[in-house]
Image (cartoon, rainbow, N blue to C red; front, side):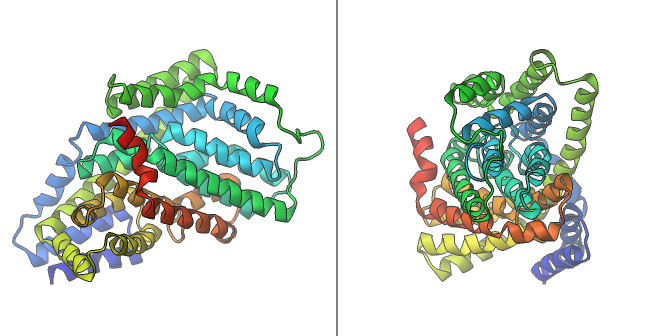
Length: 429
């Protein structure tokens, strides 16, 4: 009865368009009021106490660092470097977009932020060079998903906090899978561009020029130092991931304001304002998601689901296939943060019981939800790309299908080849 109330109310709220954070809170509230004797105040108590976490502070600071770097000239220099590396190839602008997103992913930790920062430049540029608008937007949307896999990753921070897993190990585990997805997207973009004849225009470089790479690399050196400082400081034991996020903010202000001199006082104010608004939304989602997950734990719902799956099979591959299918569907309807908070306490004990490493599973979980960024009807990256590129959502949703297929193939590789995720964490240990 209680389980039916909980999930029935949740589905009704989502169906009528209630924002996900409030849908989670209302469904938990309804189930408690009609199905238990628990006090209703438990919802607000858990929502507030869940946010009293030092590691969670990394999220707003990484968000702020990403916004500051976008406004401080970092994106522009990363694009120039990416252009010198791959801009001369068939489909050069699409390749530049993907490589630049990979660079920016190592700074922002956010999928939508990566799409906005890089797509804002590249989608109009591709359309101006006769690239089909849906394809141009789909490239940016899919490449932006890498932002939550290549470290530093905000979902990895959240998973580490919830699952009791080392955030530093999660960052290491995401490097090779992130590169794999990036390469897969590059191959997909190249094949489509070759078929459609997207070649460099007259006057543009048509060959690889080493001198140009060196020049753009030198101009982007301060931007490229950011992930080195963040990750080097964490793995060198100099600071924690949360402290690394603060260092990233300070560094972004210094290079944007005093080195590149492109971060104005108005831009600084706007960066803080934007980050406050985004973080307020994120914290509401996290708080009410934790209340929802806590109530499920009290009602032993995770245990029931775990029992069902383990009765289905004790083979870890079968369990992981079933979980992947579930997560791909969940990612279509629920945002990454809510899904992480709700599903991690349910699924992590299941996979650990059948011998899957928590770090490996964290990468699988986040990779699944990264695919959710480009799957309608939620598809946050698709909406961001549509907004910054001025292209209809429906056109992008169709054009993104080849990239979606490439990411699902990568997900299968990540799932069935644990060494891809575990090699660097094991090497570091």
